Image (cartoon, rainbow, N blue to C red; front, side, top):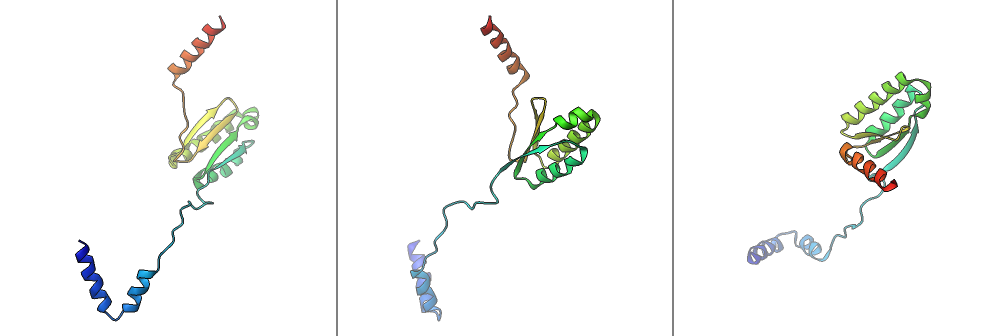
Length: 139
């Protein structure tokens, strides 16, 4: 195999581009070993959902694909439950469209994530077992 490459190299040396070949032999290319910063960062951004119009900013951010949205739904929940359901459905459809994930955290927050982030969900069976174990510990 080395003989094959040396034959090619000798033919290239005989050509008129001899200077170019010798220069390529002596030079080298230095590659960066660190990942570029900036565009690859993930942002966790808080939002407050006080009106249905606030949904636009949230879904635009989710579509960008590098932001995890923490949405406080308390103001709209206290104001109008029907509007809250519409807003949550719109956010859910956007998360589904970008293959992201959406989950409620407690009674007051939603977490919407991009495609590469999945939200951990404890199974109902596992949560019931933990609650029962906690009750037994108290007795």
